[in-house]
Length: 149
Image (cartoon, rainbow, N blue to C red):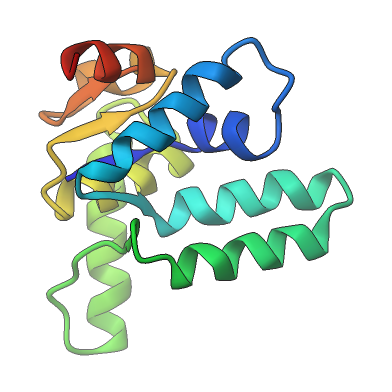
């Protein structure tokens, strides 16, 4: 499975005048043939981008479209806990383990969901943020497209 970062989704859905839009659009179309997902944190982040642009109703619509999509999975961190106290304890440990790798909270949460879902590739334009901090393969959309011919 591949996981797609907010920056790629943001260019595809919001910043369509960005020079990277053609690559993002090609990537989103060609990646439909593989198992793919976005973390719930990426989805919330994407909706937050829309909301800060005074596009709140679009944010809610997009959120529900992704929840109902058949060609992309919403990835939640995999938890092993049985109680609410265990949940918060596990969440703290998982996030701190990634923060200690040099990640900020948002990136740590995203990487937690990516890693706990055994994603093979994380597609982002921010490869420097992640590549030295995870065992998951980190690629730009261009790199992913080139690898698949």
